[in-house]
Amino acid sequence: MNRTLGVVLMVIGAVMLIWTGFSYTKKEKLIDFGPLQVSVNKKETVNWPPYLGTILLVGGLVIVVTTKKSR
Image 1 (cartoon, rainbow, N blue to C red):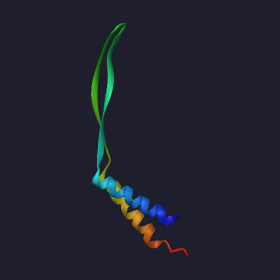
Image 2: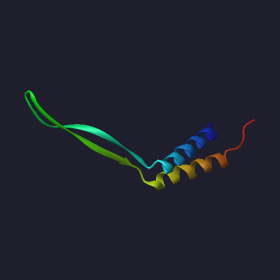
Image 3: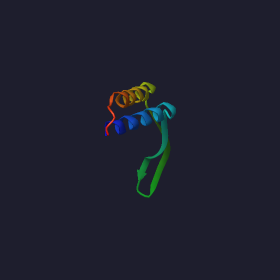
Image 4: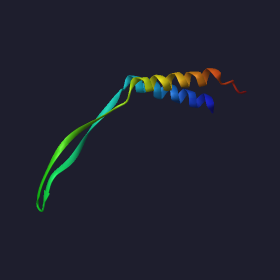
């Protein structure tokens, strides 16, 4: 179980280092006055720091290395 957790953390950390964020489009209403509606598409970006991916990668590696093999 611990080895699996370590491998999962390593994969998530590597993905976070390669793919540093994502963006999406959000529709926002500016005016809502009866039948008149004006909306705007707004681009939002979500980024995470690269050191977070490094911490997860190293943490997963430590878990995998320190876990004893079960028979």
